[in-house]
Image 1 (cartoon, rainbow over the protein chains, first blue to last red):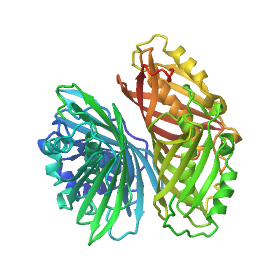
Image 2 (spheres, rainbow over the protein chains, first blue to last red):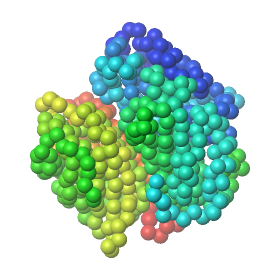
Image 3 (cartoon, each protein chain N blue to C red):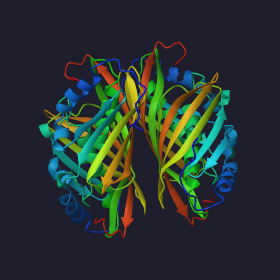
Image 4 (cartoon, rainbow over the protein chains, first blue to last red):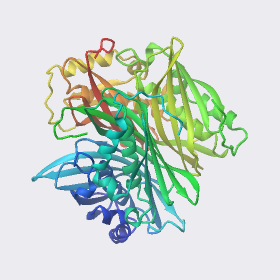
Length: 153
Length: 153
Length: 153
Length: 153
């Protein structure tokens, strides 16, 4: 990935992403791990596993979406101030091909950061026998939330 | 739920949905269970569990989406002929409120069935201390696939 | 349409919608007219006209979307305080059938109102020789904007 | 725009796009004109005009969407066989900034071509006093239709 041109408000953005990621039970359950963390772009990786499959034995679209939504959410989170929490307002995913492969790589990128609303895009690739294939694209809208006690960032 | 007015092409639609659901590793992993199966409408239920959470302790949006996408996919599947497999082309989810609750109920409904393309909508409710709250809506496009050997229905 | 259960913050919500609608050049251009205005729900009607067609002679999807987006935006607007302006963050439209008919009716409804973010759904019907057909559904996210000088409500 | 790597099935793809574009009443109404036509990518341009505005005097989101949807549709159309007609199944648009400017440029690009279903993405830019600004992104699903008499391509 080439470097992004976004300037983070919080120099500790990467640590903030790691801390939040570790609190996500769902990421442990699906075996997701953080890849690169850059201002405005975050990668998450995931291996195929039977407990994550749909009825045809491919990775369930929901698992692709779970990891891709998180990649987009954290991409937006890198550009938010230290006291912000991030919530996903909505996302749309296009499933381009069955999620068939050994490893999956999800990359979330900020398209337009904002004080309240941030728009991201996500791309998911399957790696199968060394070949990389784009399997899903996502458009995602995030909201920065401040001062809600029950939402830790 | 009031009855739907769709007439299934396959009288064994419910058994076909159950058989497919049981082959989904992801449904076992997230603890999802099938609820009502009617022509053009399927419900899936899910309990809160720590392994399904995001960083604030709520159900991860991806888990809500996984169950809701499956509910929509099976809603469409009930109206397809016996030799069809169903694939999700795309979906869009609006997360209306944090997925906070003990139990979650996802209902997928067919809006427009078609020979190739079927459009569904989904609604997810959280049940918290007896109160029901709409937490997500989905718009979903499915494709009926025929004769692809590697895609069992 | 059965009455909605939303309580508007501004008793003059209908007049506020009418005033805003009249400032929209695009609504005049496409011949759109306001129908019912209720708290959380607004209808817009539109007649078929050759200048609004796509290459097959049906109403262009963009024209359906233009009127439906406005219906959703005004549905949300009815529930906002008097000093709010409304902007569409995003919408998704599923085109269920060609927009074939003499008259089209677009209804926007609030699914979840919010201080900053409001989620709506829209339905578009074609009326052809007395029969009504659902031709499009929309999911739409709005933002209430305050105090921006260049955005009059 | 750098060249695309798609190989069209029909060498006369550009002429086919032009012929279809000219049959669209809506494109004349909004003053849209075709820009570059390449395999898998089509640009459409549009000038600001009062009849295309929303209530704040910006270009109506529906007009942005109308042109962007057409750009995506024609991008997909360039890769389809000569006897195909193209229909939009659904699209989702994120409005990143008010459509403020003198001229607007919409570019549709194929992400994943398919025999039946093609997925595209669209980008809309506003040109204001020489500066270019990304104002909208679109994700779009198209269907190739064959042999329907009432749908000319």
